[in-house]
Length: 306
Image (cartoon, rainbow, N blue to C red):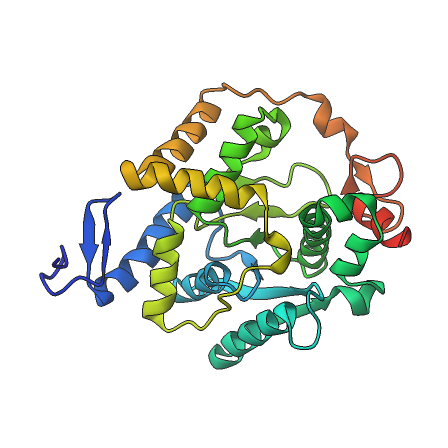
C-alpha cells in the first residue's frame, strides 16, 4: 500500500476514509483534521486558555500533543484516583503524564483525590452502595467535579478531553439502546457552559477512530500506559465497543456514520431540550459548583458520607 500523497510506503491504511498515508503525511494529516473539526464546531480560539484532562493514555496525551503543535495555550490536568497503590495503575498513569510534560516543558496540574479529600476512589467505591455495583459511576462523578473545579479556579476558558470516535459511538449506542433521552440531549463534541460556574467542555478527537489515535501516538513516539483501568472489567461500554467493532469490520465507516447522523438529527431539532433544566441548577452549599440537588452536589455528599 502506497501513501496517497507522496507515493511512498504507507504507514497506515484507513479503510473508512479510503486513505493510506506514510508516517510524515499521517503526522501532519491528524493535526490538520483536528484543526478543521475545532474550527467547524467552534470549540475554541487561539486566544483561549485550554485545560486538557490527561490520564496517561494514548488519546489524552495525543490530544495535548496535537493542541501544542497547533499553537494553542494548553495545560494538562491529571487526577490521581489512587487505583492499585504501590506503583499500580494510577502511579503508572501519573508517571507517563509527568514524563510527557517534562520532556516538552509543559505545565501539568496534579490533584490527588486521597490527599485532598481523605479517600481514594477505590475507598469511596467500597463505602457506598452505588460504588459497589457501579464503580465507574463514582469515579465519573468525582472526575467531573474536580475537572470543572480546577478549570474554573484556574480561569481556563475551556476543558478538553480525549474522547475518540469509538468512545462516543459506544456511549451513543448505549444511550440509544436504552433510550436515555437526557443523556442524548447532552451528548456531543461541545457542551456549552449554560449555567454559572460550569466550564465549557469540548472533545476535539471525537471524529478520530481509536486505531487512528493509537497510530498517531506510536508514530509520534508518545509513551503511554497500555493497561486498562482494573475497574473497567465488565463495563457495558466495552461490550458496546465490541459490538460496534464487528459492524465496523463488515462495513468500514459504520461508527462515523452512526455518530455524525446523530449530530445531524440534533441539528434538525429531533431532540428538544426541556426548558426546566436551566432553572433547576443551583450552587452546591459545600463547594459552590452547579448542581441539580437541593443542597449539596453528588461529589460533596459522596465525600462527606465516607
